[in-house]
Image 1: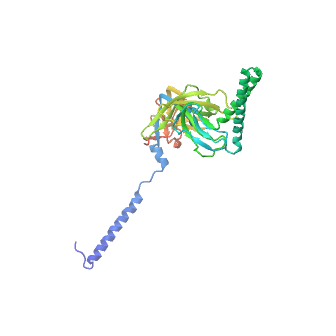
Image 2: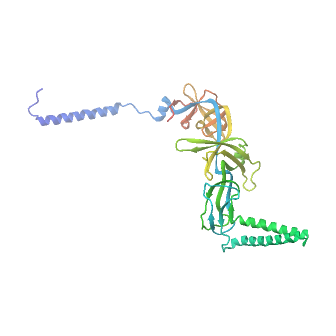
Image 3: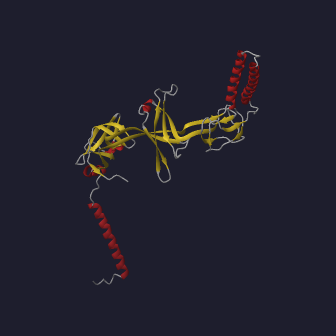
Length: 364
């Protein structure tokens, strides 16, 4: 084609560019005009279904473990204290030492000028006086110089003074009440202490205990001999330590209204440490052939429970159910659904009775 003489090369390029732009613009306008209408979310749900996750109803082993928090203690454990407000003279042992019954753990200063040490010094003086009187009276009695009644009176006075002195002495020379392991020492030599302050702890740790105080509603699900466990998290894997319920109080504490429950655990490897707060799990219910569904499937409306059951046409039906025991993840159903039914476990908040569903795979 021959270009007219009145068009320069530059003018030709500009005209061509304008033409291209006009064509593109026209195409876009046309696209907007003939574009198919966008469906609303409700219309998509009606035609394709509401996306939900579904699980099958089956029978299987259902174990219900209830979790209770409590402090771990040795099967025998004692916190050692003194009724004196004074200072620590000497500590004879270290944490981790095995001590025998009667071993002196530490010595407290009995000569501190504070008034709290006065009773010890008085009991000590009375004991020494009674000891001298008893020894003198014994010699006289054996020589026939005093009556048996006078001798027995001196013996009684001595026994009372000795008992009082020994009681006071236990606040000065702090002894181990039984053979065990020294699990804690909370003071050092020279530290000031106050009356009733815990100075050290002695425990027998080959077995451990968790003491619980529970409401009547929780306590009534427990009984002696029920299996128990503590899951100990380690670096590479969790380790389960087994135990059982040792006792459940038959009456409530008159002050708190709570029931005392003791759970004991074997601890041969020392994985359980006194003083740690733990989560003890107790098997309160176990049935081998329960009708089970995930807990997430259950809808609550007041005291009523329901699920959405999906039929072969992917239509959801709201169905009332009766629950048995409830676990952390699964629940037992005693009426309302059957083995082989499919229930919605996620997304049911968008459903109504008779809604079409679109089953999707569970998120990983």
